[in-house]
Length: 358
Ligand code: G3I
Image (tube, rainbow, N blue to C red; front, side, top):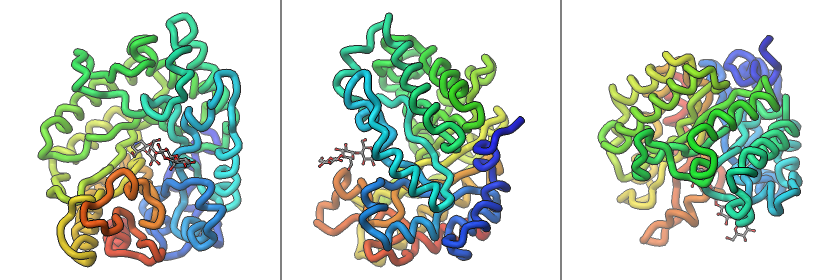
């Protein structure tokens, strides 16, 4: 029997849920996306949701899903080896539940954002126990309340030059490639209803050779996991797009999405934004460029019925990690998201709405 959170992660249930929530804007992105069976959401942090009421209202109006941007990562949850700090994650869960937002959990295993103690303790004898204890503790705590999870994030790195294309993370070096199956099995055991994803970046552009090659590596990995009966339900495509590149999301990307779907997997776009660090022009021109990239990307991915969720990495330019990570040389604030710093809809919002409405 399919569980409640699994059903909510699917389009129809979410459409009903979106309709049931008074705060949801009828012409907002969540409502438009729900009409075609897609959950629209955004990543956010508990402190901005709590301290900025206008922003919190915007999230409730425009989103059906919420991804904690940083507070389910090891460096926040596991400051010390034998303790969990669920405080900030619980706060963001409370916001999501008050506003009927389906939560996407990010991320159970990642090679970044780990506490220093982890690399000391990750030895062959202890590693499997640490992995299982963490996943059981975190997924188990939120079982039935977190709809989907990035179980392993960014597991593929072809530059690490392994024949299987896997990243030489501490998890891989300690446990071997089976760490991926172990993680999915542990997550499934802790919450059999949760939709479990393997997520990665660098799968989007048709005119970037390493990305095209990475798609092949990813398909082989996914097919192998499916063949072995590993409880994996979907691929997360991050969707960090570039504002100074041609939007080359064409036939090959569309075919890749079809191949993933044929493996019986859902596809979630988990971290969509458009990096305008090097986008030329004035604000109006930059906004148009960014909007056209959103439109081209969404037109391509929404053509594939296996795409069940689209999440932007932030919702407004007021709160985006791009500000610190990819500042512009001209000192202008970055504008990677559908809402501006005044929380007004931008051309990117219109482009997304048109893509959902198409
Ligand atoms: O919360 C502390 C704050 O107390 C302190 O004063 C400040 C000083 O640097 O740091 C704050 O923490 C930062 C945190 O973001 C919140 O702003 C961390 O240093 C910083 O490392 C962290 O960066 C995050 C990064 O992942 C690493 O975890 C970004 O916000 C987040 O957007 C980014 O997200 C990643 C996804 O998880 C995976 N895919 C790529 C994506 C974008 O890079």
